[in-house]
Length: 233
Ligand SMILES: [Zn+2]
Image (tube, rainbow, N blue to C red; front, top):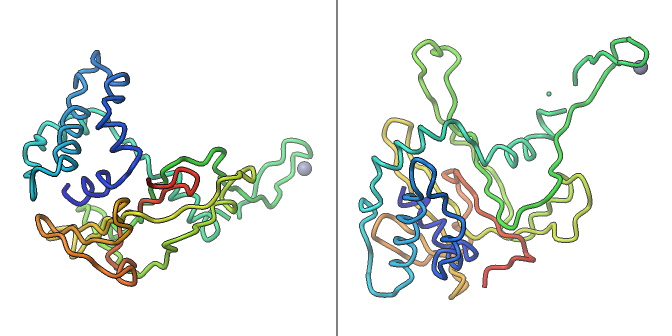
């Protein structure tokens, strides 16, 4: 939780959105949660940017309440689009025989997914956890520790886009890292400060500066990119 909050707290457009109160126009008070999660997150972001505290305890974020809301919201996965896109070249070309509606013959076909509109912030979630096929009856999750190479600057999304958008270049500004296994794991965050332009490691209440060469590791779990046109300011 701390790790993701640090990543969100370093998302410049989100910080502006919460700190200037713009989010209030969009909170859905008629929903069963009455906008409580947005209010709690806004309070945390404002506290972190107030400069008043060395660290804050996010248990105030009422974790139990959030998990209740999350299960109510169901299985929504906002990372799936990017995940499909980046696995497309390996897996989605998922070649198949396809029934052609014109000649009624089975033909070789290629299925692919393209992104029609690129977002200002791109979140890429590596699928590190999987159910061990040998133990699927007991839902035993395993973790892939594979090292994945990813660019810190200039991730070119043109190859995953339906059109050739003008703003196709993305820079990395945060990484949520996971160490250990499904049962006993630890999260940290690496975030690039929009104020100082340096990378920092957030490990619970300890924050240390790190060189950019340390950002890529086999612990990387969720990547946060910003469009160069919506550059972190
Ligand atoms: Zn045909």
